[in-house]
Length: 247
Ligand code: CA
Image (tube, rainbow, N blue to C red):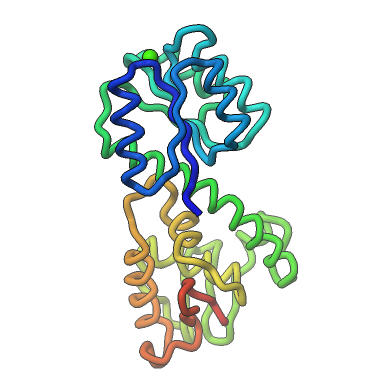
């Protein structure tokens, strides 16, 4: 089902441009020209994301944001008319997730919308993964302990204190991202992790990296830690999802 985006903007030509471009990306777009209308439509349609202009006739965008934040968790992307730091600060204080300063490129806006929706989905996914993690029972609750205790998988040792990985007592030369990827996989041993979740946790939301990045790094890691990289036993591929660390 298409994700729903509500666009709130009183300037007709910009509203139209935004609605057009978002629809072309496959979103179901709803529009509102005033603060009151925005509240109305948001309550009726329960959008997955809201693009909200600050300068609106009647109730302004900040007030709309403050009200909606208490009623729904949909990410809110604020549009500010100028590079006004006060607007940005207040915007974030009233619960906006991100903001863009006018004029902005449509490409930038679409990228932000996509990132915010992805983040929302990942948060839900991560909650599920954490529940699985607890079930797996082999992850220490204390973050501090995790950081100090080496993770040992037969002849493969991840030494967190030294930030070092050893295989058969030989220190491996891993790039920083390879190390972080291995650590994330290892801490979630036995759990199928999607490329998106891996991407988020290891590379972060903002990063331009795509799922190919994950695949490439997994390939490099396999060459270093697997006996036969083509028949991986430690980092196994989960078809259609991502990867699972087996130890
Ligand atoms: Ca406006």
